[in-house]
Image (cartoon, rainbow, N blue to C red):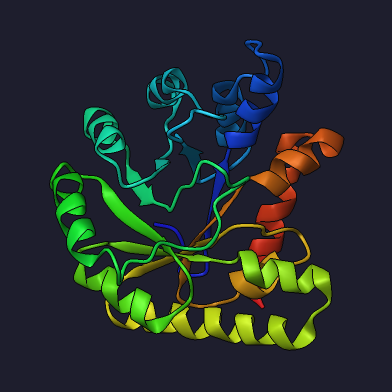
Length: 250
């Protein structure tokens, strides 16, 4: 059993595939990156199979399912195509995210409140198959409560705005967003949801989020892959895990 202080680190390997696809080559292999991350202490692997296959491809999911001994968190849009793929593979977890073709990366959280009926029907077969379903949402009370109503087991709070405000040095908005995340982490936990967080987190921004006592998991990708260019993926994962551990211990 892991101690209560432990926060799991999920490593998102999407942008290893981004580099591969930039040249249309077979390398670097995101499955190889996932295995390396697993060996260096990652608690899980996250991969987002987008509708346009801009980074992760279908064969990558096949490879990840075959290779990993740690949980796979399969990020996807709430579409019939993606539901079929998830039901075929039955990953440990499915995280539903908003998706637009023109965006560079996932922008904002799901509007669960607006799509409540659709999402309730969409989630049920995934949950029945054994997948833990997570919804990627903004730190807003109505969205947290709607996530519980539609049958999600987990919410992943979007930390992108918090990180942006930190680097923009917009102190007032940074503090407001931090309080929103802190309060919604506690609120979600109080109504029976497991709480994760992610998007844009770096060495400078992770510690305050990791310190939330209700938080169970952080999913981090772009920064770790970027830092790995200079320091190696194993070293980047170890440093991030150290910062997360120190934040919880303090």
